[in-house]
Image 1 (cartoon, rainbow, N blue to C red):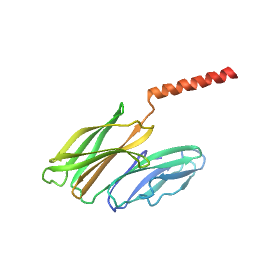
Image 2: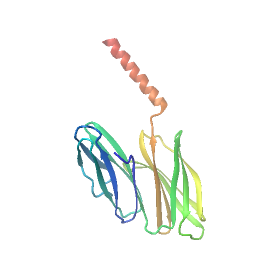
Image 3: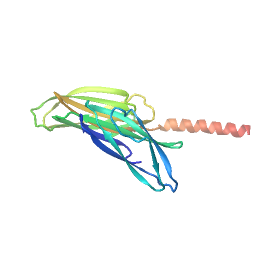
Image 4: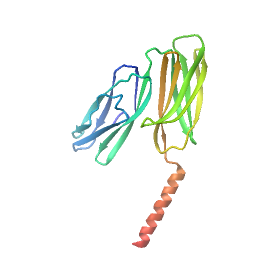
Length: 220
């Protein structure tokens, strides 16, 4: 399934179409169940079942629209029997009149600290002023885990490194979002990051598995 992650950026009340591609690499026909999660308000067309012949590829169009500016998260699960793959989905809705834009780059997670390079651009060439920025972390069910706000003075462009101390999170993929608000202008940026199993947790799991294996061998 491609892409691995789907991000759709649109203006409020705009309709856009994104395409996901599903390929059956086997020599046997198969049926794929497509299950959207937390996307019912944003995607109006999504086939529930797709049948693929041997070596066949199909493109699945997604019609996306929403009226309220913001960043919305969800996922699409693809299932074949007991096997499944999850595609994170981010929908960024911007106001139609954008005065200040924002971007997030170089997202990096280390020791429970998430870092991102934030850039704010005065694309309307207005006089220098203060803008409001909201940052937040969301899971793929749309739950807000962390939220911070600050006011930043911007001339033509301003770039800075932002750090976020994350709470204890379960393994999986999450979204960092940023919104810049100035008068009636609303712009967004986002990125996906992943919480992976820690080395300590892996060692603990291997120890437990080792003990269970020894007990089984002892009682055989």
